Length: 375
Image (cartoon, rainbow, N blue to C red; front, side, top):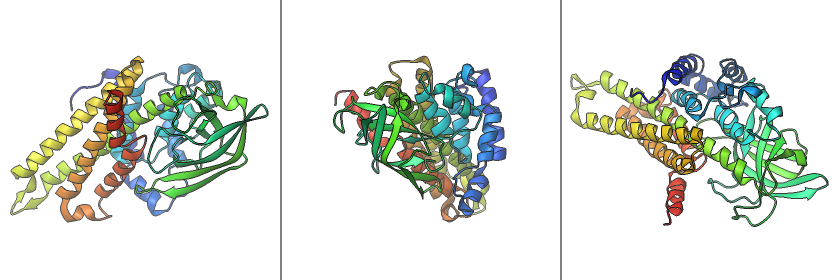
């Protein structure tokens, strides 16, 4: 494997690789699915993530974390993707933490996340596709606000301790200004969560807010200026999802290459067939380009670069395409066995499909890049 990481990051990768493979392999996902687990992940495993220090990677030391960066978080996410490990790591320890950093709520929630005692969910999307439109309203009420509206695709929303909610305090649905981000406790009166199974057996909730009242202390950042913390959340979430997609695509590719080396037809391994070698080489190249794009986005985020936003969209789009290629090639080159539930390769395709939609699909980010370039 090419050396993209420094020595400390390589050590973290090796630690995460061994830990996740041992404690949360694909068999762990299969077991939760077959048991129709109502939570969607293992709370015990989440606590073990905390004991390993993973949950505090992006959290500063003052709040009980390690004070590392998006490159290190991506190292863990890639292993989560490679093993299809059901975990609130992406939504909680990456995206939510990015939004909460420097906020008035940091002292309350970041130590709990670092300790593995809290789960956060992102109540951002309102339709079947990820868009920038926000129609949920937050009206002034007493010394706080009253939230009214609904959200969809809220991963772990039915069991989260904290909901990070984007609502409109001024302007129209498509306006960039007038958005405010709120930290809403899961037990707030008037809040209803309806969990549904996604294609990959994970659970995401439809959230309904019927006059949910929060006080002014719930505002993350400033009123009407929620695009700033929301932007941090989305950049972190998109980059994290891209890193996990690299893991999913890499895991599917590894299974495929192993199969090509072992499966025999006409008295010889199918990996000796030049046509399949070409396809495997093409897949490897696409995955490496995607991995490099993700690393660039992570590095620019850690550096606070004004070019990070563009790099994040490039990474999310490229990993969506590369991993889609990986899982499709995996199914095709495995042949009939790849279509069976007993074989794990199908789980990779389903997880790739869900991750590709999260925080914007390939089309969303390609369009975003084109518009920002003036097209």
